[in-house]
Image (cartoon, rainbow, N blue to C red; front, side, top):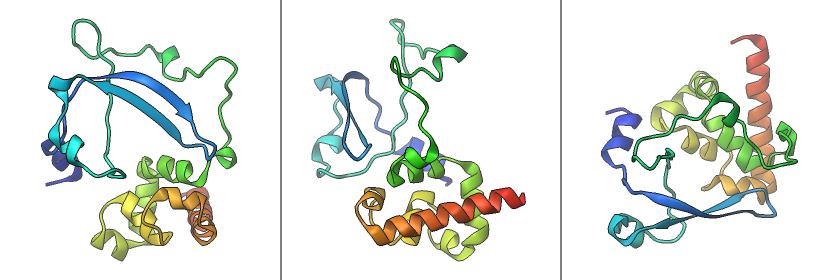
Length: 163
């Protein structure tokens, strides 16, 4: 069973409404949703605080069907907001972006085959390489931050060589 099949099998289907959005000082975002009582899953209510979840969101219309965004809507930012440069992102955010990049996954598979064989989860590989239990530690643990920057620089060099 591949990770996508496992995710589908264990998915928690529910409808939510966006209720709040705020950015913390460290650059992380807090996104708040409202869930109707009938949609709330016991796995969420019984999970301890700090439990991590993988989330996929699809906007739906009044007809309950997914909405396909127009190309110009895909890169909407708040008025006056500019695209952040890579170096402006917090290390945890950088790691999150890299973990969603199939090229980065290929890099880890090639450069750390034993780690990938033992831990075929990209986020877990990054945490192991950086000696942390959560990517958020990349913003607070100096050694972990240095390890992350070394890993990312190695990845960028690997890309330039044309792996």
